[in-house]
Amino acid sequence: MGHGKKMQTAAALVFCAVCLMIAGGLMFGATESKDASENSKPYVAIIAKSTTSAYWKSTFAGAKAAGTAYNLELSFEGPENEEDYETQNEMIRAAVQRGAGAIVFSAVDYNANAKAIEEAAGAGVKIVVIDSDVNSNSVSCRISTDNYQAGQMAAEAVLEAEWEELKVGIVNFDENSQNGQEREQGFRDASAESERVRIIDSINVISTTEEAKNGTIQMLKEHPDINVIVTFNEWTSLGVGYAIEELRLGEDVTVVAFDSNVVSVGMLETGEVDALIVQNPYAMGYLGVEYAYDLINGIKLKETEVYTSTTLVTKENMFEPECQRALFSFD
Image 1 (cartoon, rainbow, N blue to C red):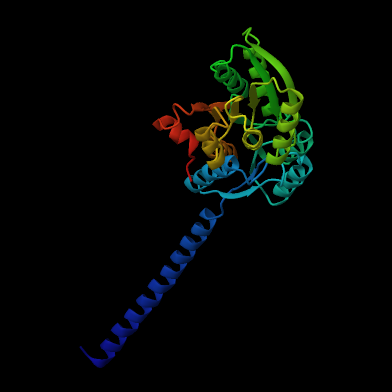
Image 2: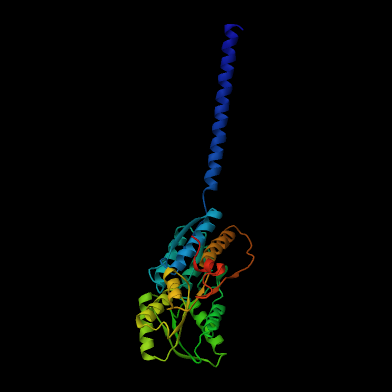
């Protein structure tokens, strides 16, 4: 091959190489643009009643698992106490400003949270309620314990107590929280069917361990004939348990409580608590995010009201596999 032909061939090869590089660069740019679009994740805000309890940590663990499965950006927040509906309303409005496609929400106050939820829905944000309902027709889906049935389950546990006459004290949390009121109503309706049950006193306390403990001690001092206490969430359950421990009434008062954490499970073992109605917050968190994904993507929901499982755990059955799964949430 002559020198001129070699130069022509080399030039042709260089030209082809440059063309391939340009083409490759354009293809890379298209791929990069496509990836960037795919990585622009829909944003779902999860606004709970609090963030510190074992119950809500389990809820967030379930939500996080669903967020990973469905490639969503999530935020998790809640007020410092379970009575602060005003902070929740601020969080709702902030989530709308941040561009949330959906809000997964548990209401502190059935009525006082309604306006902020309506405003969010009016701005095009999809609303999924978990755990505690809000008074709004703009909610697309509700996922919770069947609270009325859970209250009836508590009544069934009370009727297993050995006392001939069951003299009951009720310790409930914020009366503006819908789930607590539904649980108490289920308990009252079911227990009214038995002539053994007599409700001696009923109190509502701020949803903290200390307030529940103090309220329980005061109630027992005013009504020393009470031999059964029923209470309806994690913080009040701990408060009642601590009151029974401090007054050394483990042998004299049957306690039926709600939810589980390391402390309340320990109380079940040592006798301050006799039964725990255990919900499934992990499933609520997972399903809440899953349904939010469907709503954002225009997928028709299979159902708009979902009840997650509830398990009655006692000292006798607490080591059975089903009860162990209920007591110790996934993480």
